Amino acid sequence: MTDAVERLEERAFKTYKSRLAAHHRLSSRNNAWNASLIALSTATTIASVGLLSDAAMYGKRGETLLAALAILSLVASLVVANMNYGARSRSMEANYKRIQQISMDAENLRLGTTELTEKVFLTLQREYGIAVESSENHSQGDYGRTFEVKSLRGEQRRDTAITLAPYLSILAPILIVIPFIQWIVDGW
Image (cartoon, rainbow, N blue to C red; front, top):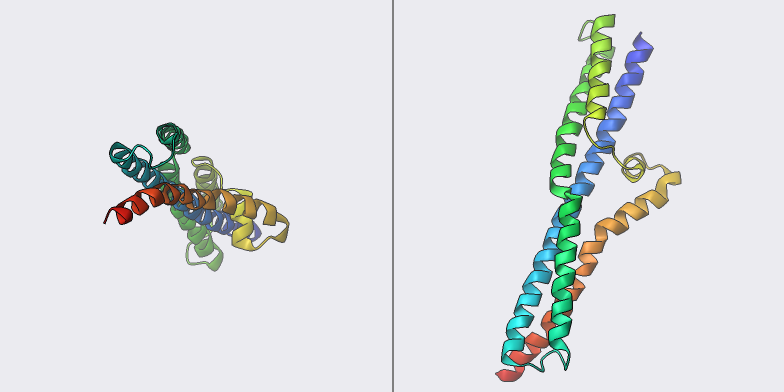
């Protein structure tokens, strides 16, 4: 039965580390998208104020451009709200902490600090199964990143690209605000 305990300990530890990586990924996406949406909303509001003072600030079709950006901002916020990164991150955090505890309990069984009985082992194995099923799974990219699995580099790159997308989208608010800043500077 000690082999089974070792396998459970190893499996729980790998799951814990992968779920920890998933928590960080989801938390990063939540923060990044929130920053991106705040920047876009702020920039479109500033640009709208600028248009009230100078209708030509964004060219002949400035109003249409800003209306389209406002719609884009709304759609992006709905998509991000639907992805629910914040709640998923918190759920993943609770899950990885529970699986970490199971891994430590299995380690204690293996080291003999806790008496190993079939009942104790089966209870711990059942708790592991419940913990795994009680949360969404980590991605292959999370596993590959954690354990440096070269065959999963593509999954890791995909996860990274999705996580970086909101940071790249911050370029749009910067570009929106530049004409407003130029207008203010020219007015001094």
